[in-house]
Amino acid sequence: MRVIECNGLTKVYGRAKALNNLSFTIEENKITGLIGRNGAGKSTLLKIIAGFLRETSGEIKVFSEKPFNNLMVSANVIYIDDQMNFPTALTLKEILNVCPTFYEKWNHELAGRLFDYFSFQSAHYYNDLSKGMKSTFNMIVGLCARCALTMFDEPTTGMDAAVRKDFYRALLKDYISYPRTILLSSHHLNEVEDLLEDILLLKGGREYLHMPIGELKEWAIGIQGLTGKINEWAENKEVIYTKNIGLDRTYAVVRNTLSDTEAQQAKTSGLSLTPVSSSDVCVYLTSKTKGGIDDVFSED
Image 1 (cartoon, rainbow, N blue to C red):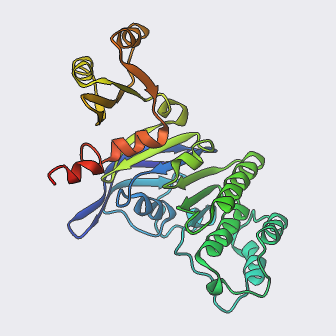
Image 2 (image 1 turned 90 degrees about the vertical axis):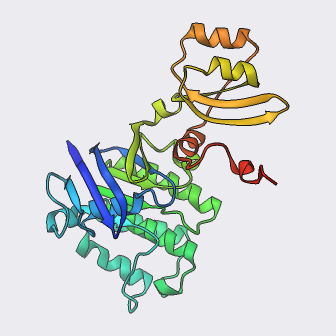
Image 3 (image 1 turned 120 degrees about the horizontal axis):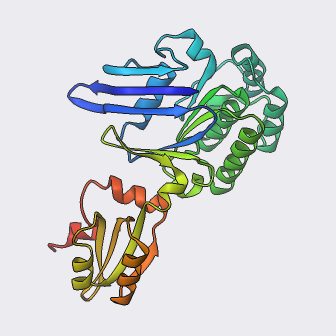
């Protein structure tokens, strides 16, 4: 079943296109990572899917219906981000107690155990929490709502490393026990890639890649050696990134379409082949300029 269907989706703010003719589909019961740099359109896309924003043009369907101002979609979707608001008159425990009113599949027992594990106090108020504790409380709500479509937009903002690790573990364990469609937007791809089944990479409001995470890990390969040999070897290949790594030596990342024969020929020529992490691939693909930060200072 297709949970989300996008066709030519565009969202315009003034003269800027946050989303630009975006088309993709998301199947049910998968964890998909939504990856992209700041301004790529991730939050805008999630808010349109949640029904908070109306698209400028194109078409989007969630559970086969248009999401904007749609009660059926709202009842089956939860969107978690660091701008969430809860009633200021209610304590944290009171907020959890009213959640079953809004979320049919709310797991109150799990919410209570997570509440105690992360050392929340029943009488405290949401607005009095630190940024990291707010994110942790949001995570509890997002997990325990168990909505058919659950979206986390940079959910670990402010969390320390130990809490982030606990969140990812909790997310995976609850997903295994209660599968649903999860979209996870994160700047920490290296932390979440083991959770993901698919990845949707955005650049400039467009889909750049949409594939299983396992394929992304093999999508590119790094090669280093003498600059002349690198240039000759990469002449007819798709070069994603290059940098100088010493006197007349270059490191390059290319699209991994190499046959075993080509790989062996590269090694015979004195070139070294190395894997490229999924996180680095996404950084290189979404870079706005060629080269790296060192190139900014090259004229000094």
